[in-house]
Length: 168
Image (cartoon, rainbow, N blue to C red; front, side, top):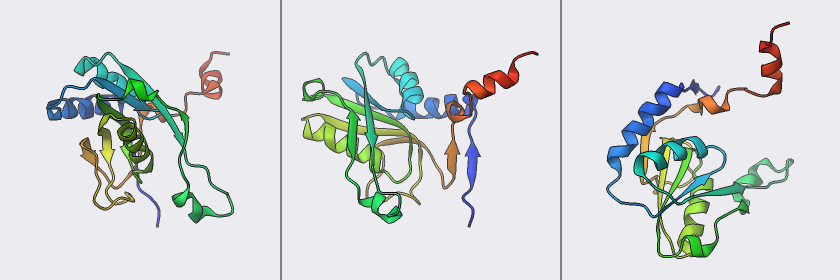
């Protein structure tokens, strides 16, 4: 069975962010943007919510290629993460583009909580059909989907694309 894909435009991203903003009834002391997907929506939200303390988290789930099923059980490797002192006692909005399996944002949420912070999760799209956490869901989300979402910042914009568009 082929997985359905959906390409989201920049205009649609703006509408999704606009849909999120009225949902917030908490003032946040800081935001943690999950790289790379959370950078763009997080930047838009920190402007709209006037959050000045913006941090990043980079998480990887290593696994052995020959043991595909093992990747679901891998412990997260935090490549980059804020210091505990930047999170302790603070209301922290954690932002990513999509909650698919939920592993990445849940790992970040748990680490913020372990540091003494008060985490809230936020995504543009929530896919309850792929989530590994039957009871968990983001605190804030703009839309529910069953598709593999492709965001405008994921569209091929590398050096090969630039060379193709240059005049002879």
